[in-house]
Image 1 (cartoon, rainbow, N blue to C red):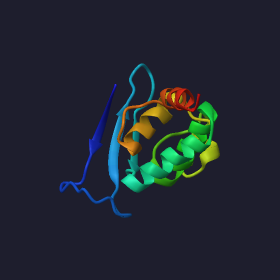
Image 2: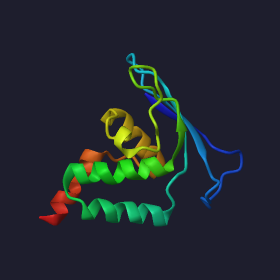
Image 3: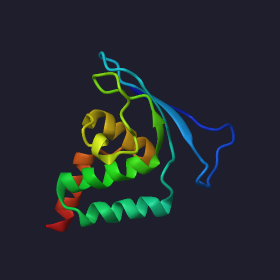
Image 4: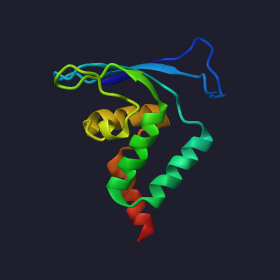
Length: 129
């Protein structure tokens, strides 16, 4: 179970609109590998995401904020529905139907972290109490 990032040869500290990272998520255990291209969050976008998650309560709020973010930062991927048609990575409603196992890993790549949506929601709820 590993994520292999293929960065441009020259790594950048500046994430402009044209900066795209290619990655392969290998799940194993019968799950297909996922090849994707995405735009990593910059510090301003990370702050906006954190603000959105804080405004929306609980796991549903964290999921809504993260799937909305993913729909804007996923460039392309090779994920298919059971009928063989492509899952639109730009459609938050389709992303909300995906496995948490996949969305957690994709979110980790885009955000550049290793947290889970469930962990984020629990920490947020503990801060609000």
